[in-house]
Amino acid sequence: MPSFNFTSQLWRYEGPAAWHFVTLPPEEAQVLKEALGNLSRAWGSLGETAQIGQSTWKTSVFWTSGKQSFDLPVKAAIMKREGLVVGEQIAVTLHFE
Image (cartoon, rainbow, N blue to C red; front, side, top):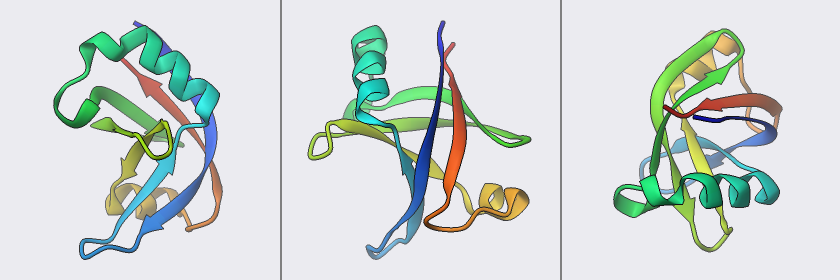
């Protein structure tokens, strides 16, 4: 299965449960949706292994229709380990199995 590499800005969702995310660039999101959309699960999610820096973890990307893209949640432990800061551009690799 394919891997997808992209760079995107880390942002914080300011809702009741504050989470951090990166959003796939629209071009990559469309390629991903066309290639793997038939594998989507609940809420349009796709399971994968994410990699930022030296950190890898099993997670999912979630389709956001308003953005026409996928959002990748970034765990607090990953943010701490990699020294990530909101607003920073970060390189991400998604591995699909």
